[in-house]
Length: 377
Image 1 (cartoon, rainbow, N blue to C red):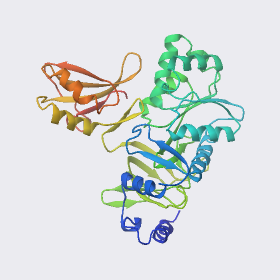
Image 2 (cartoon, rainbow, N blue to C red):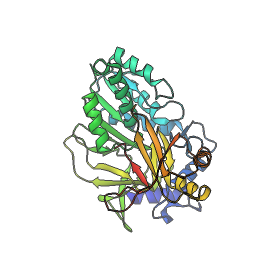
Image 3 (cartoon, rainbow, N blue to C red):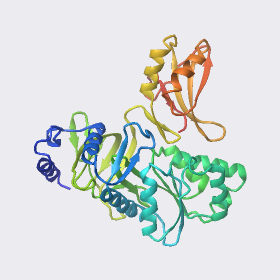
Image 4 (cartoon, one colour):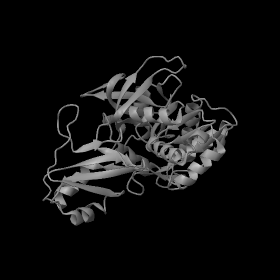
């Protein structure tokens, strides 16, 4: 993809637009969402929301051309995994307003697979899903990695994990960052390789892993990295995305994703060229139960409404039942009721409060104290 062509297309499409993309070196996701919302305000299509911010500004309409393109990309990524026509696949992404659930089902049908769209725990109770897995012996599971870890725990507890993985060939993950420790746990529990996929609400179906463990980007996207004040075509940095046709007539130009990556322009044995390694987010957004949580906003709320709290930190972790929870660590004299009332309206998941006489902030790899700890990994 030639970036000059993108710039020329954008200039031709929006000659008088006040947010003309060529005049902006890098645009934010919020600005890109605003332009998409304006462009498709009266267009026919399906209205989707990010699983992390349902109904709160991350809602976006996908015209049929965008859905069809995302399905085609999903199909190409699925072909990199050991799937065959006739295989039984359980799609465990939340159905409703979460687009990947639909992309995967359409793509799998095109590949000749049988699909069981069970959805996440909010669509079908997890214990019932586990019963089905133990009886149906699927060949592939598609889900968020943390939900697969939850299912592995339930299957082990029920003594049916061996039956559930009897014909299993692979796992396909997406919807959240696949931390290396998550991959290790999934490989240990299910005993099959994991193929991770990458995408965003604003840029559906960006990349997928091959059998060599490399994440490859669709040819419909052009990737760059922002390192310091310069934009480069390879190396480490923050991923910048462009696309000429992923959104139909609307060129997508240099959208700042907020994901720290390493971009490599080296051919792979599978036939794809460039590959992408996702390192993590550069902000304090976390997903818990598929819900996007802005920890910076939570911290600000605590400081504003409960100023008597001098020390605290927030921890994302698994409980004894492999369920994701959020724990707020505070000093022993913190007003629990005030804290709960302050957090309840803004926190989409239940918060457990743990008190200690003295709070010692955890120290990160750099030696600096941390306000946020992800103990799930």
